[in-house]
Image 1 (cartoon, rainbow, N blue to C red):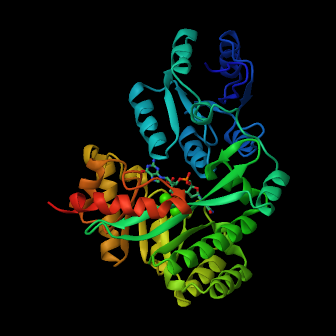
Image 2: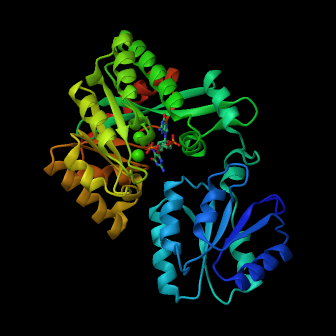
Image 3: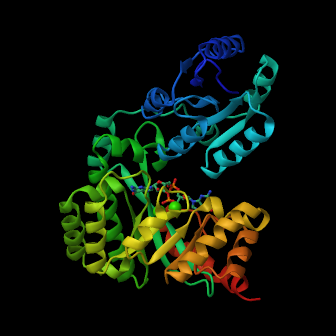
Length: 404
Ligand code: C2E
Ligand code: CA
Ligand code: CA
């Protein structure tokens, strides 16, 4: 059962009357941690603070300054992990299309309410829902300070999981992507969506990336010595690309570890609009000159991914999972998938479909002629030591998947 009094709810609406009304309705339904905001900027401030970040936001779509649609996009960029309930005076069709947009940003949406809102409808929508944090771990929502995360990094509490990438044509395992987890001494396993944005905002992302990269290189070396030929991918944050000395660090530690840059993939997402792109562009271009492989991540979700492609010699284009899973049955996703794949081919980049979750997704991307696949259908991210056993299993599965 959900603990109604502990659940942090935020009501965002420009009308003071609606704030009062919804606040009172929620109170009557037993939700006592309710806060209100009359503009998107103030709401995003709350979202950025793990100690007060709401788990549910009741969002008014029509607001004079930042409207609900812009707010939804920013929520995605701020890695909001909670749920949304859309509220509007508009007709249902508008709400339905906003709801689709929210899904495209991979946010959880409980549904929509057309004003005037009634307590019964509100209760029905919230009651169906199990907050993700409770559903996944049964633990209360984690909250930590910058000092906790800094100490966690220093104490070696960050560990890399690895998710395989395989070719679609033959099922060959070409590499793995390092995905960081925080093995928190009290909160258990904390996932990156909960702390990467926080690390970026608190000046900890360089330390974090260095730790992830160092472990990934050490692991790459171990695998190579054991006879596995695997490329290892690491995620870079745009915030890592603002100082030229980061470039030197990456080059030096790679050389020291004895791994060839061409066996390392650096994945970059443009999560936010950069004011000045010159330094990031220079760093990426120079990494490329040093023969690192560059991948553009989450393609199709960013702000100006297209513009970036012309400027940076990316070799891999990773199609975001929101355009992959279920694309065989959804025209919009399929169109996005086909357009992204077409672009990758035109620009002679290797394409990777992320989020292949089942056989239907696999068959779809295979038909489409995508080069590589990464997704739960092939394997979930796993600790390094589990990889050999998975490889053996995969050998047995792959023949059937690539024939026909
Ligand atoms: P990403 O780079 O797009 O990584 C892929 C995410 O999709 C991973 O989530 C992975 O577990 C998940 N995933 C894999 N297969 C499937 C699938 O079939 N279906 C679905 N729905 N999801 C799938 P994870 O590990 O929670 O990481 C989330 C994000 O956190 C990553 O997204 C990446 O942006 C960021 N991240 C992870 N590690 C690092 C890091 O070391 N540095 C930085 N800067 N960001 C990181
Ligand atoms: Ca990635
Ligand atoms: Ca991605």
